[in-house]
Length: 394
Image (spheres, rainbow, N blue to C red):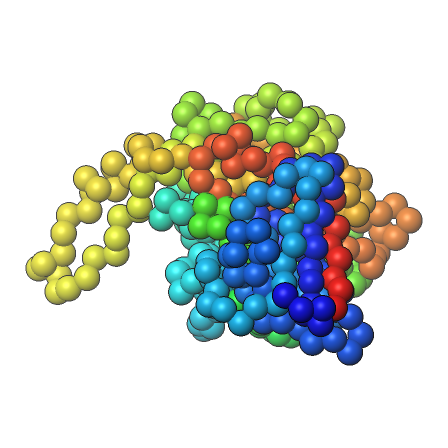
């Protein structure tokens, strides 16, 4: 190491960190290294420039009170986690290391949604269409309106009939940008929200980032800005995840949260919800879902037995956690857990001072192996709320 090499020092602060995504401002006029080497372990990791910041994932643990130091390197990257995006007619397929991570579907539904979202088990942590329970909800999605609170437009349900309607729609207007790189991928999307008569009442810009800290620890992050809103009621924005049948919630799988609240059978009223900085649903993965058959019709296998095994709740544990951010209005925000309908939901409301906007909120989704304790979900939430301090010198 020479005196002219850029040096990045990551400070854990008061808490343990596991493979955190860190950012550091680039020195004015300084060069950005494409990779850095851990001076202790020799591990070489990729970096990515985002505006005037250098971004990297610190491999492994950073213990509370300690630091990790990195210097520029031109050696081979030890653990690449490069992102990709396959652009289709109705979706963007988010990829990491050439593997499918999640599909973001932008056409054909009331709102854009993610399905599947794959953990390292190879199975999805959210369900697709066709469930016998609440079939009007699918996957992982940002929605609006809930049960039409205060007369607000309902874009939470796929049904128009009361009590779930009348329904509106989130209309995909286009992508401002789609970026991939060696550390994270990012999609910036413009949407217009329309009511049941097709009249626009809100404009939104949604930034979606994705990366893997490691194969078992995968993230999707949302930065959402509502530019203006003129709906009839003050409806909530909802980040909701419908869990798949193999998780077996609440009999086999479990839902936990930072508030320590028990899982109610049903939560419909806002006053019955509570505030939590994170909420997690974990359970059996069921293994891999049945593969799509291929070949001529006479050679198609009978997948019914395989599908029954998949839905039985066998297979390694995995889960999905929704993390709130202290910058959001009302943090920690209202949370609803639905044991009988296998849903976790986090609600954000416009501020009283600016009910018509603009307002913004941030959320992070953790897709993990194991249960919430094994995945260290509380630590992941704490890292999101209070990230590492990082310094850079040349």
